[in-house]
Image (cartoon, rainbow, N blue to C red; front, top):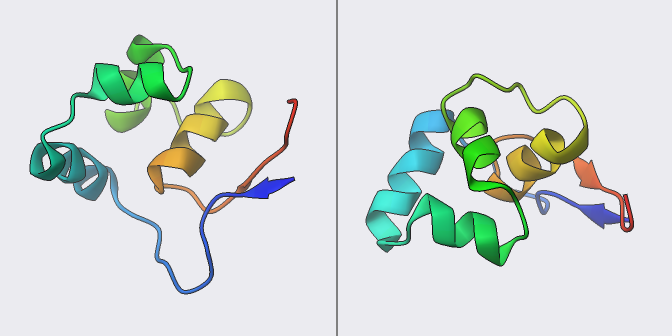
Length: 75
């Protein structure tokens, strides 16, 4: 079992998550590919069109730091 956020870190807003991409100069597509996610689904999560309740959208939201959650290994 792997946790999403470490203790003491706050959950980011969607705007903060998008701003982090702008600050780092990294594209959403390259981040998605590095984490084995579909780039289109990452954009949907960042746009708030997929709530990240379960499955891959949940894992994306946790990895982006916009949701406090747990990512099950092998899930």
